Image (cartoon, rainbow, N blue to C red):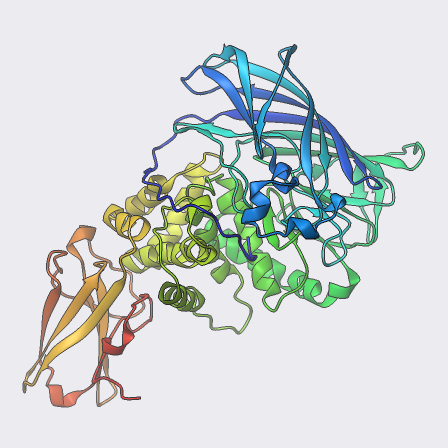
Length: 590
């Protein structure tokens, strides 16, 4: 997601550590829905097959009714800072439940804003399948938060979070997070979706379109079909996904690129042609980097769709509102969400950094265009330090809905979230990082990994201990601050001290001599229980630094201080050091 974010009301730090799930629930949806574009309503019926793969007997089922966040009088609209007095009747939205049947029996629903609760007459036993049939009516809101009608770039309808969706259940129980405009969590399954609408619309979204094909400015039926009046059907199938999103528009331009048996679709408006043609021109190279670094995209299609409010990810597609200076980077960011949000299915509410932060890490790499010499960390480090100085920082482990203010969430999920894998890469090296992401892909795709699973993967490939760093970076607001102190004058030995405050880490430094020679050194940290061997150039390893000692004394025989031009900590700029003024010697005067 790339957008302005809302301010949540309550600060609550999650102290839940991840636990490996050896099972996961399965939810399969068969949805039939009709878009009434005149009334701004979607009328639908869904048949849900829910498989309880847990060891628990379930006595209730919870539903997400996301658009109830846009009902008149909802608390979510207050959190989203929408002036309800300025909204018209058609601006509000909702998901109304017409009827519910479970295994043939009629049920009622207890609703509080965006969460619905079904109290079961008979528990769902372990390994048991249950069928729900739900009829619903979704009133489409104005495009005020991701979904809605008539977005700023001219797209008619963006239908995301548009149907009753079963809340996720895992080893921590039901996840019934209310919707305040932030993150999502879902359960993998199969979607068979049939959508009907006026035939002047083109529909793009999740899954494979099975009964039609796209043309440059419209669509064609794959088989000869006699059209009944002005209404036509669109049939989509998607497997191993945890949501279904779509958009409908009458004036899109459509293009596609075929890469590695994958169809990449692009739906956009004429006014934004230049940005979208640039995206298409550079996409083959971006995807090649993605595949090399993070694994192949495992679905047969992906759609970039000009729709929605902001920039937001959904399975097999992304909704991109309009245009922005970094449009190509943003499109790359949203595509990479289809790995860390889509393929892995991480819980964005509890562990937002596993999606947003790691996606930022990936975006920085796949969005590098020909001829660019990009510093992958520069934006994250500058933004992290600016927000940290301007606003109170909260631990990354705070759940998405419970940050005190918007900037604290954004800093934790995106900037500091990106720095987490960046600092792991700094400790274990590029080769192990790449190997780790490929192992993560092999071991955890479609399995809802949690923080310990992510960290353990990189521990396994590097044989380095990283759990201590996980605790520092995710559960505290301690910062990184190294400095050079006590440089001593000596004829034949260079002696000085490196100081540390806050988070301990291994340290790299360079000594530049007046004859132009630069020597590089590495101080391993005892907590890693191993040493890095993957460097960018010849680097000498020194003795380990104990995490219990804030100072580290260095003696480098054969180097006279009179021959030293400069000593530099972290010469490659990999550390988000909060006080850079003492990171080099002699101290540079302004």
